[in-house]
Amino acid sequence: MEWGLIPAVPVPFRGTTIDEQAQSDYTHWMADQRVAGVAVWAHTGRGPHLTSQQRRLVLDTWRTALPHKIIVAGANSVEMARDAKRGGANALLAFPRREQTIAYHEELGRELPVIAFYLYEAAGGVDYDGEALHAILSLPTVIGIKVATLDSVMTFQRIAAVMRDHPDKLLITGEDCFLGYSLMMGARAALIGMGAALTDLQTSLLSARARGDDRVFMRLSAQLDAFAQATFTNPMEGYIRRMLWALAADGVIPEDACDDPWGPALPAAERDAVRRAVREARIR
Image (tube, rainbow, N blue to C red; front, side):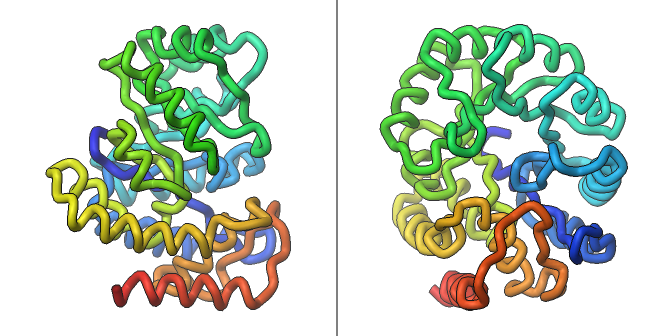
C-alpha cells in the first residue's frame, strides 16, 4: 500500500436499487487506473447501510474486476469482517468505536489485517486520545491508521507525531480537503473518497511525492484542492452524490445512476459546479 491510492468507492444507485451495469462499468474503469486497490463498504460506499446481499454484490464485482489488487472492506462488527474475508477482501477498515476500543480491534484482527480509522466526530467518529492511539497501533494485526479529520490540520499533526513511535505502521491519509499537505506531513498512502473520481490525477500526485518531484506535486495539489472545494462542501453528506456526479461527468457511469438513498437532496446548481470542477481539472 505504500505510496498507493486506495479509492473509497461509492455505489451507483438508481433510486434505492443498485445499478448493476453502472457498478460493473465502474469496476472495469477503475481496473485501468494505477491504484493499489479500492475500499468497499466504507462511509463513501454506505457500507453500514447496505443489506448483506448488497454488500456481497459490491464486493464480488470489485474482487472480480481487480483480482490482483488490494480490497479493503469497511467493518463495524465481527460479522461484517467475516463476510469480508469470505468475499476475498485483504484487509479491514475498522469503523471507530468508543467502547472496548482495543478489544474491538483485536477481534477484527483475528479475521484480517486491520486499518484503524480516526474519523472526525461529526461524521460518527471518535476522538481517540494519544493513549488510545498508541494502544491501537501497538496491536500486531493493525497495519496502519487512516486519518480523516475533515479540516483539522492540528489534529492530523498530532496523530502524525504519534506515528513516529510506530515506524512499522502506515499513516494513511483520508484528508480529501488537504490531501497534498497531509502527504507532506508524513502520510505514505491515501484511502479517500475523492479518489473515486479523477483517480489518475491522485495516483500521479502520490507518485510525484514518492519520487520527490516537487513541481508536479505542487501543481497536482492545487488542481485537487480546487476539485475538493467543489465536492467536499456543506452539506458534507452530499459528497457521496457529488462523487457519483463527478464520475458521470467523466463518462464513467450514466448520468442517471448517481443517486444516494441516504444522502441529502442537492440543487441542480451543485451538479453544474461539479461538472465545471471536473472539466477544469482536466484542462489544467
